[in-house]
Picture 1 (cartoon, one colour):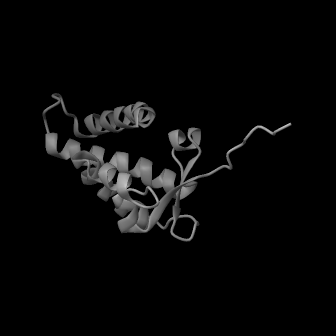
Picture 2 (cartoon, rainbow, N blue to C red):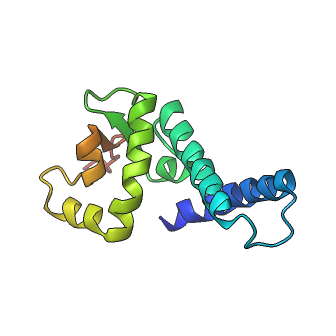
Picture 3 (cartoon, helix red, strand yellow):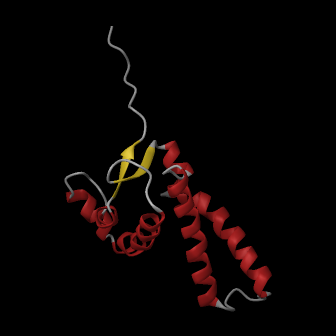
Length: 130
């Protein structure tokens, strides 16, 4: 999550700069609710596009994690959007993490509800025994 947050800083910075430029905002609290909605959409676009393109964001590639549909294929756009929207309350309330601790497949609640799952994208390489 920390790696993802570092990358999201750039996404939020560019999106907020565009918002300020397009609305000619002179103060950070001006149009606060509109700004929050804009950033929610910008962050969502980042995740949804990454999940749709290859099933991974850059941090997910680093950790060899991939988001797949229930059958192991690429997730449809609607599932990516619903997963993104559901992940917010599940993450901030802690319900998603708590659910994953007790889930038989260690999946988050929003993945269960949408029908997606996180998998290890590469086989773990183990050293050969001699």
